[in-house]
Length: 238
Image (cartoon, rainbow, N blue to C red; front, side, top):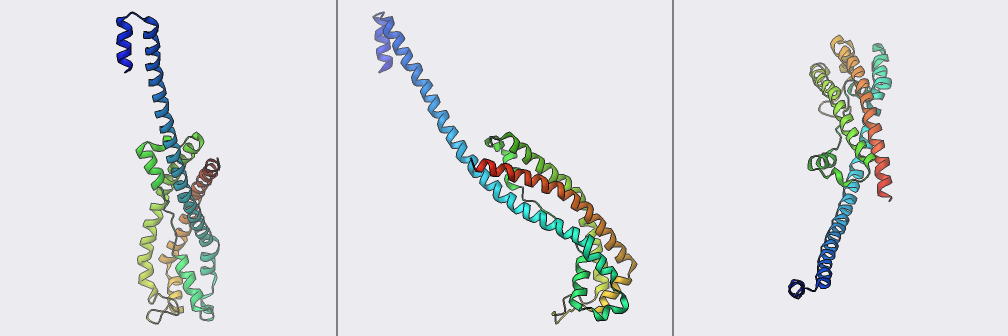
């Protein structure tokens, strides 16, 4: 209809009508683009909200888990290993077997942190990181990924060393369950065998030190997680 009126105006050389019809077309196009842009912006904001909520859930889990792992590693260094070494062998029979079992297990054990990065990885891979308007939050998310990747180097070393130590532990321990295990209960004799084995004791001490270094790496990861959560909360409260 507009095109028909425009042709008639040109044929009649009614330039005012021509200009008016052209303006109507231009304004219609501009308004159409604005409506589309507004709709896209609303869709992006809705998607951003979902992304932020998913990230907040993942990072809450990461924060709890990294704190648990760091506490375990630090306690192994400051409590479990020293207690394991300090019990006089001649007094082992006077110590509850479950206590001996707990100290043996925890001294030769360690814990590792495997962060949940699925949401962040998907954002980076798909380019949807742009949905997050806060540039500081985007920076902290990338910093978290870098810190987590750096910590993997020490984690891989500790994993390998730990597995090798398990082989020695399996050779020495004999029965390996708690005292309530009717089939394979741990015994005071197994504790003494572990304490008297120089290779296993050396490995336990090295594992303690490696775990402490790894715990230091995780402190950096924990700080990155805390920074992300602070900015996630600020964005979700808006």
